[in-house]
Length: 387
Image (cartoon, rainbow, N blue to C red; front, side):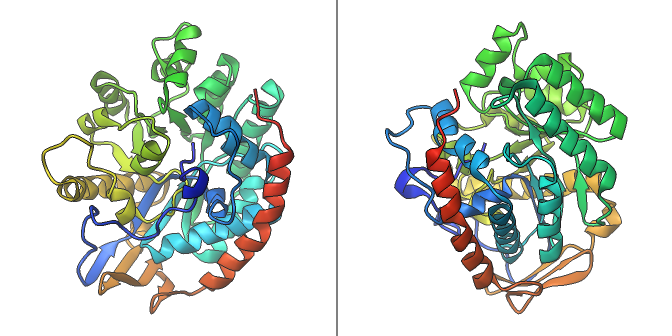
C-alpha cells in the first residue's frame, strides 16, 4: 500500500539524504528497476488532504487516505500522475516500473491508460490491477481480475507487460484468491500483491483458517513461480526461505514501511530473490536506499544501505528479466555525470539526453499533475471512509 508521508509530511524529499549511498561515479550503469510502486501516487505532493482526526493505525491510514484517493481518481488525474511518476523515474535512473494499480470507480480500461502514459514517456512497465472486494464484494473483484485478463490479452506494446493483481489477501475472499491463481495459470503469468505489511493481514488469514497470508496464497494455488510479493514486513526467515524455494519474489519498500510505522522487513535478508520498491514514493532508488539500514545496527546506516543496494538492484533486474527478454534489457542504461543522470536509454532508445526527458517536459508534467489534483481531492473528501 502506498506509503508517502501523511499529513504535513506529504511530498517526500526527492534526493537522497545524508545516510544514502553515494551516487554512482561518472560512467554507465544498468537501468534500475522499481519492483513495486503506485503510479498515481505522484499526485500526492499537490495537496493531498490531511484526514481529521489523524489515523491511529495502518488500517485507518488505508481507509482515511489511500482507499478514498483511489476511489476518487478520474482519467485525467490518473494519466497526469502516471506520466509524472514515469518522467521522474527516468531522471532518477530508473528504467522499469512494476506498478500495482487500483481505481475502483474506473476499473475497465485503467491499465490501458497507464500503459499509454508509460509508453509515451519511454519507460518500461509491468502493470496489474489489484483486484479487491473492499468496496463492491465479489463483483468488484471479478471486474479487477477481468481488467487484468483484458489487458494481458490485448497489450502489444513491446516495453509494457501485464500480470495478475490482488490488492492484498485481507481484502479478498478465498474464491477470489483461487480465481487469481487460475487466471495466472490460464494466461501463463504471475501474481503481484501486497503481503504481510501489517498485523491486519496476518489476523485475517488466521481467522480464515490459514497459518498466515503467505500460506493462504500457497494453499489456494495463487503463487506461481515468479510472483511478486510486496513488503513482507512480518514474514519470518522460514517463510522467506519458502518463497526462495518456490521462485517467488519479495520486494522491500523501506521508506513506506517507515512512514506507515509497520516495521522493518528484517527476515528478507535470508533471501536472494528480494528486490527494491518505493510503494508510491518517487522512483529514486538511491533515495530509497537511505532507509535500507535497519535501526539498531552498529554499522553506519549508509554503509548498510550501500552493501544492500547492489544486491537489491541486481535482484530487480533479474525480476524484470523474467517479464522481458533479457537481451532487450541490456539496452536499458544510465550515464552519470557529477552524481546526476545525464543520459538514459531504454531498449537502446534515448529517453533522457543532457539531463532532460526526450519525450516530455518535466515542468509541464508537474503542471498537469498540479492542475488535475484538486478535483480528485474534492471528490475524495466527499467520500466516507470504507468500513
